[in-house]
Image 1: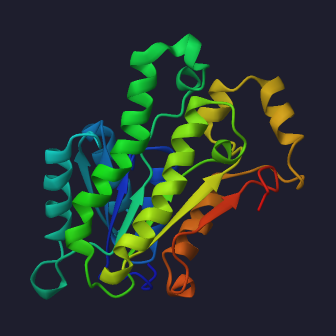
Image 2 (image 1 turned 120 degrees about the vertical axis):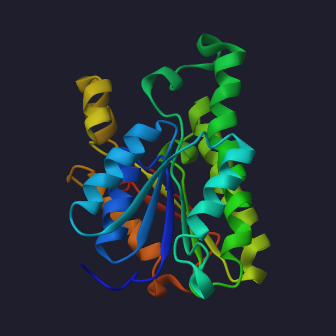
Image 3 (image 1 turned 45 degrees about the vertical axis):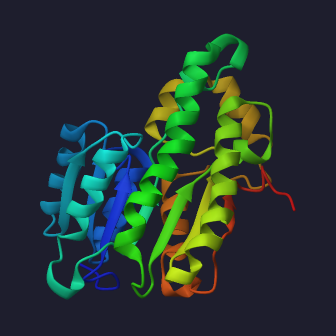
Length: 255
């Protein structure tokens, strides 16, 4: 087990699978007590149990990130894990969101109800979790939040991308608002990452078309996003806040 994060508490939303599970595994391997929050509490606890089986610290909790009261409970419970003067939260990863092919359709096809749900989860959910964690992160040395945006935020043309553009904007807003409390806020915009979900959902021709937009030949992999998270939440990034790091192989490059 690493010790870089020893004594730290990290909360990861959408932590039961995908990027979120990978974030939890990486932070736990460095010594953090990770709290995996997922709308499916059973999946969150299964992922946490896998981490504990390695002799590392993990807790799985169920909760909808749009439920303000539940997120307040989750953050308070996470903050109490260390106990005593160490009580609090050091890292928050706002990873949970809607991103399947179902929510990648045109607004005219999805309709208002589904579009509203997309914005409620991806945008309001990020705000709800940030506000719930904030009181437990104030004044903690090295406190850091990382939001998950998307390359779609920088390329335009989809409601999903619009929600992730809002997440990028919130990163700047919260970066400014929470700086006086010693909390850094940054975001990661992943490009095409060949997760199991993407492989299962995205047609081969779509993957080929998107990959052709990359400047780098290498396939995007989940560990690229995990490495970016580890950097942004580390002391090496102590003078970085309000930034969006594009991890896209050059696909979404821009100024």
